[in-house]
Image (cartoon, rainbow, N blue to C red; front, side):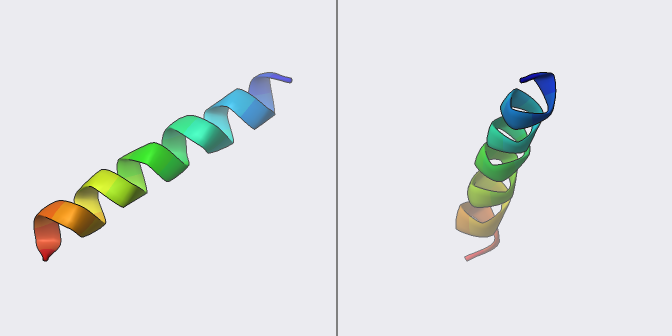
Amino acid sequence: MAASVSILVFNAVIQILAFMEK
């Protein structure tokens, strides 16, 4: 389950970075 949570956090960070990049 830890891996699943890590993926969710990673996805959130990517989304934020992508938003800031634009």
